[in-house]
Length: 348
Image (cartoon, rainbow, N blue to C red; front, top):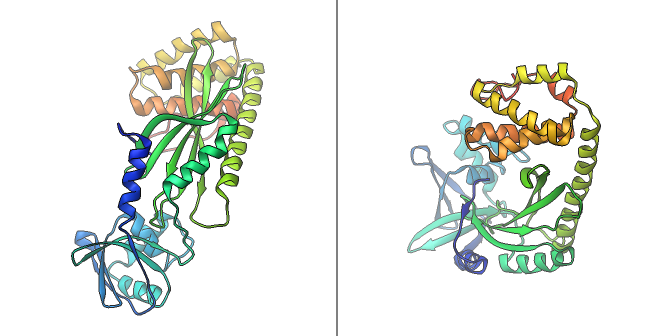
């Protein structure tokens, strides 16, 4: 998820979203719908109840509308089917799926132009971002989890706030959390994005690896407090597992034959391989001749070695993290994967 840092406070950022959404209107589709598509301009026009509604055909709106024809498909599959049918009956399929469906159009209106903001079901529950935040903070406070003042924005206009999570004494792994405040457009959910922070013991620096996210959708089925505490519990359970994995990695002495195979399979430039070798020697001296040292060496380079290209650093962090979850033997014996661009991943 690409984020842009904001200089404004979280209050100001959320107020801006709340004010903008305050102008959004709704219209349940109770009658017939006619559809006009303009692929060249990536536009769609829905006509219903004597009114025209224009929409930009980004992947979000394509997925929302396409799901009325092809339910339960992910975004990629829906977009693929949409493209296949764009000149072969797609407008007719949409008309049939939307007419008398009760689907709710959410739109903004400026003059005589109505712009589609989103498409929702009749069961959609609006959520005020500030109310969600207040409840979330109240739920997380007893756990020592609180905002740290950093505010971001996603490319879709969602506001993101970073929360600090206390690290256990003597712990080797901590958590970080970014809260995404969803939009009331039927597509954007409220999300808690968790990452784990692994202490690099030899220098006090940390490395970060994303571990997953929890989503709160716009329904009444899940209470916000239950959502928050359940998400935290799952994250801490993951933390406990990682601590055990680190302890296990410390006990696995390096098999030098395996290590040679590992180094041979690294799809890296020679200069980067040299940096890996140098860092491995450093970690072996400081933390022992074990697989935990290999994980630390790779993760350190991925997070802190600016001379290595960003994408390669990202791959090194990912590989180092995987060595916490799988023994070196399993990593080395895994088949090579090829990227969509036709190149080997980090292991050839």
